[in-house]
Image (cartoon, rainbow over all chains, first blue to last red; front, side, top):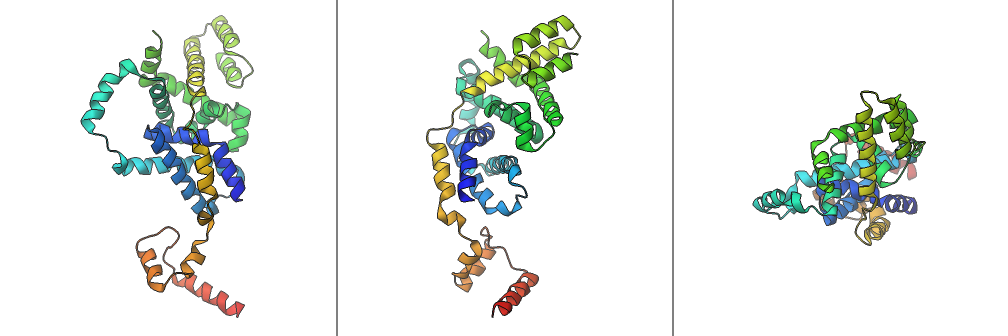
Length: 168
Length: 116
């Protein structure tokens, strides 16, 4: 059991880390969040009814852990003025990592059911059939969710701005 | 028709180039929106493909998750503490040490009697 859970968590680490990074926008905090979520998950294993649902369930725990951390934002030592100045001057020199973080947070802002589909598609390189299998959903449902999510993201002003920055 | 093309593209049955050609042939009013989605899909894939977690992070998680103390049962651990510590753990809401209900206590005492 212990081995199985450890291997699932590490096997999908990139997914969980990216979910956390999208919320917390800080690499080391994202790593902490995934670890905290893992501990929480182990303490609540009895709530998992089907082992097949473990991935979605743990993604939800990761998301909730990040939201908790944002609510009790005592871990951040950033000066608000500094953050505002940084933001104002950042658009011109967005690094690739910043762009990815912004993209991840746009994905996190999607409704949960759509976000997990998008995350599996882009972070785990899954096709629709695999996502449906992983989340125990119908293929059609996954397709509709993905379509809606992409349509929503295409309309997002901040994503449009990010893409414009990239194109010289 | 464009919806079908997009569906086929998302399912991996058409590549971006083929999907673009078919959409442009269809020239429907929403063709532009479909092309936008395909472009966004490609842009997201290329941006997120190389996102890598910090080095050794997955291994650190593996160690944390495999730590034996995480798998210790809180009830057994609680039994090994003094009554005061047990009460304090309940009062300060330590995870896994929730307050026992009357029903729960009765159940435990019944089980103890049975084992005797």
